[in-house]
Length: 456
Image (cartoon, rainbow, N blue to C red; front, side):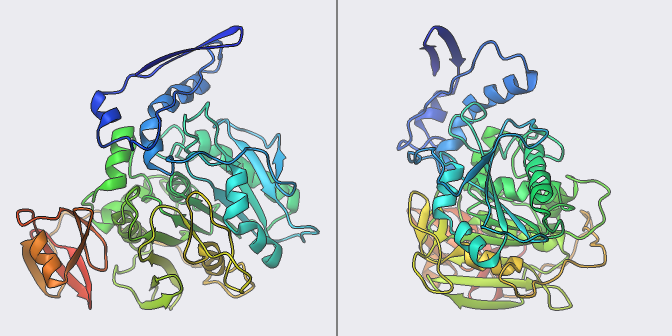
């Protein structure tokens, strides 16, 4: 595809070359029009030029990451305030904040990242974070992407120029945190980050890149930290099992801040079982990654049923402190879970990619300890990150069965939707639902099966 756009008296040129299969095949959702962004030819910053070029290619991923709708108007609500200047901004982002009236000093900060095609105003209006900020007394920072950086306004979670420590958009978000802390005299040890889809993937990258800044994070329909470093890898990450061990996933976190030996962030993961934009296997991989980061087993220490068909599995350390949570919302597609209403656990409003089920922001906020309760503290001792070992260890115990995907579903070890097969419990992707594709599954707990190819 090529685009040459004349805009007013200035000529703006953008040339984007996609393989035909990318446009008409599986990489672009047909519901989303492919719209090239505008690239001013007189840009004199090499970094900005690079980001603008990336913006054209990023349209491929944009369609799959919350990019199938039209965003609301960009005008901010009265309570959402833009901060024009916030220090170094190599990622060329915009900063918006929501601050409860009369906010006291030494209060927490939550950084909330929107999804593709969305804006700070969208996330402010629907996510429920502002109403929780009023109730629990904390400030919210809403970074905003632009079409100059990414044609569909996705944060560039798949680009090392933007998602690593001290670089691009990640560095801009760090500047926003520093400015918010200075402005509100906030508690530097109580800074948190959350996000949806591309924003969730960027949140995971921020937790890996800045474990010394963020105490915890909430990832909604997102992807593991550093799953992708290119457009093609990003699409593969969204849809497919990467077949990495928990230790290998954890090593990608460790590599983002070499030499860091302090406490690692706690993580709450939200995933819909009917999400066919960011497939459910990503929730499992996030769980694997962050439990391994904390040196924990991938078997939950507790399981709880919550409203909206939600199952919460928690992963605690030897002292009983929960380090990782995985919320699986039955039947929910791609989006942030909200629960409009006036009850104590309800918040948010429905909209494009804000789906009625359960108030994810409320439960994430309590996990952060924002409700005034006592959150599980960050470990006072340092966390030793696991290293990749080449030694062979015995596979975990539990029934192990090798069969076709069809046979697994018939036996209740897996389920299928839309012709694709998923392991019960872990929701790991097993490929096409037929009698020819074969996998091994192992039960790690009742009704909880994981891929175990080569282990049976």
